[in-house]
Length: 299
Image 1: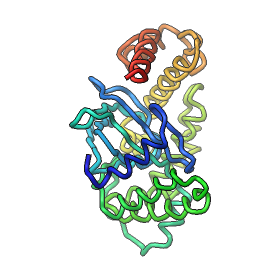
Image 2: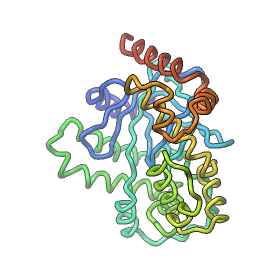
Image 3: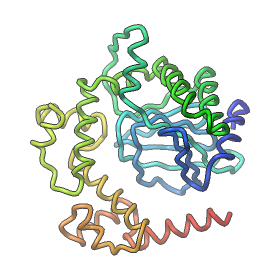
Image 4: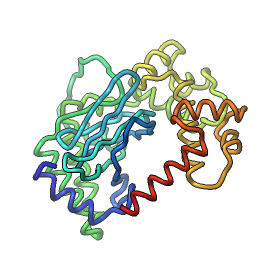
């Protein structure tokens, strides 16, 4: 771990519990993890993520991205990905902080900056960017508020605005500006994604998705695949399986009950697709995750 991130890590360790902690700073989350032997499916929110210790590989369709404390990741919309956590070189666990992005606040901050004409072609909805000294210092000021919770209501919004300002100045400011433009292609696909998330347990209707996004069928499909690496139907299937996994982990529901809750009409089809997605049948997968969590708690 770089020495200039040690203060960040020390603050996080003082203010986090096991695995995942929603902090008192709105939309700021702390995550811990152990190295995994292979990639596993995960759902990234529309966020910026800073790794403080360890590293991670994420795959979007056929694109593989790797990042560590020297970079940060921007996800422009909710994306089902495959990820693999790696420990730090000295064997210490993965530690990261993420901030869910607020499009309205991004637009407000962007409006205070000189106009920029983005000519670069649209890429995927995720990008890795080099960390800068200014951004690292701003992140430290934000995290420092965790040690002074009474200051969070008054100061956190100010520091978050500065953080977004620094991000907009970065090499992927274009991607963030697209988030702040609801009528652009990315903004329209974000609306399509929101519609799918709200209706993930019902049959996908492309006509309704076109209405929600304000795009033609051809334009919707082209931009959706370009930004997410998936077709709308594939995206919905990924969401259903992720939701099913969370429901199975949260309680004692049977796999067949969960299958119908998330929208499957056939329990056997659900089990086949779950096995294909997560590498194990539902019951075994959940048992393995719980065992891994228990082992980490005892470590």
